Image (cartoon, rainbow, N blue to C red; front, top):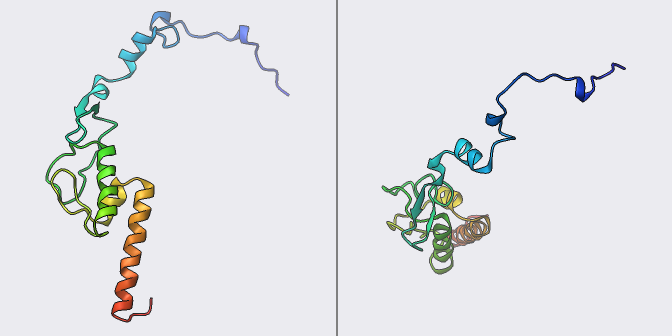
Length: 138
């Protein structure tokens, strides 16, 4: 078995300790490592809260049919989808901003997992009823 050098015998290259991340203050780290664009905020058009533009809003439009950037926060969009599923037909889920119809993949992308499961259950029930109506063995 090869002997490993002791910690005291390892030589490190000379460096300016003031610029080393371990010796930098928290303020210096914050400015140096986190771009100011990550601190950008945006107001949600539904709840009017000022939220992180990078973390609290969807990256993509709510629906492929939308012609606007998302101005409603993720939480409000998810609440709207949940409300649509509970109060409308399964195939009438709409963008809370422009009322554009959301397709299956839009709901899948924007809804929380529990709401999407309810959406899928409603869709399967409707399709099963349709099959029974036209007498197709499902």
